[in-house]
Length: 169
Image (cartoon, rainbow, N blue to C red):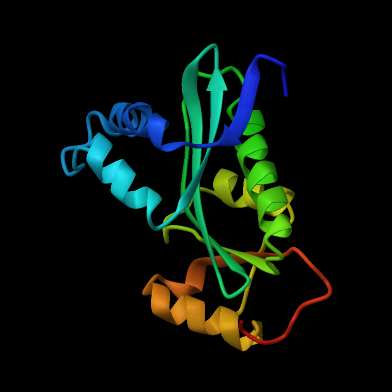
């Protein structure tokens, strides 16, 4: 990725910029709720964010959380105005995966919308993510999916470590 892009973990001081970025992306969607600085700060208590900046402006965002060695990707958003949105998305995912490995996470679970475009599926597949039969996952992963309440038919996963612990901590 070009050197003018900066990928980093988001800080609380980024909350207003994150809210503005999300609201700009949602403009024109009648059912979209306005995201506030306060709601972003509250979300920091639940998930971590990775951001990509270009010339001081936010152009990418990925939200994720780790529990019981399992990463759940909660949010991804890339500005349509950047020249290479796929490079921004790859940078977000790469940064998240590296941080997850530092935390000794074993697997990343990704819940795609039921109506996902083929390009989105191909993007994640290109990064090593595969559609996963929930029954084939480790028990802790199955429990994480059940607790999420999300549609388990559209789960993609990527194994981060071969030396899995095999039990929840």
